[in-house]
Length: 279
Ligand code: 2HA
Ligand code: ZN
Image (cartoon, rainbow, N blue to C red):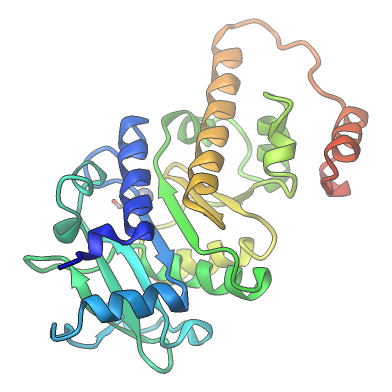
């Protein structure tokens, strides 16, 4: 019989986990990934799972204070809490889960995965709240939320003021293609305790404006339409951060980089809108 792992979106999910692991973005159980399944994908999964008893309905957030009514009844593939990205390709059914939301988006139940028990990622609230915002703003196009712990970007959060403008300018200035890949800039969430509602609310507010959000001294959240674009954004941001840290650690005073006029010209050439507040 056909297995869940053979569905194309599951294969792509697994592949992203392996690439992220190879990039060194996921020490131990660091990072998490979610995918908002389409109606057809949920239908295909439901068919393969016919006869399997779903898990019990459980609060989206252990504190019971998170609901995503905009995603009621939807299905998601998500990494498990405490699971290692490295092991997703080796044993997806133990490391990830397909979860279904209830009629008001406050409870989920596991339909597949987490063999041996467990919960979805500790950042499930952030993933769902971000997916809810992006679903509304993109008309259902944006379906992937990827959280990682890339070292150079985290290092930057100790030397660049934790402001959207400072981070956007610092990253854009490292590589000409950055403003093409994230023309809306990048949001920054001040240091907070991870997991749960508070950091999810702050992140999802920034997701109204940005596709990528930095968590100070912690990592990055990327939202994208495809797995390739989610990883592409994460890799671009981390490479830009690496260049920033290389320049800083050279000990030389950096020479002038790209100017505001340069950013305007990039916007025009690549037909992307560069917000005036970043120029
Ligand atoms: O360890 O990345 O933010 C999982 C995480 C929590
Ligand atoms: Zn994290």
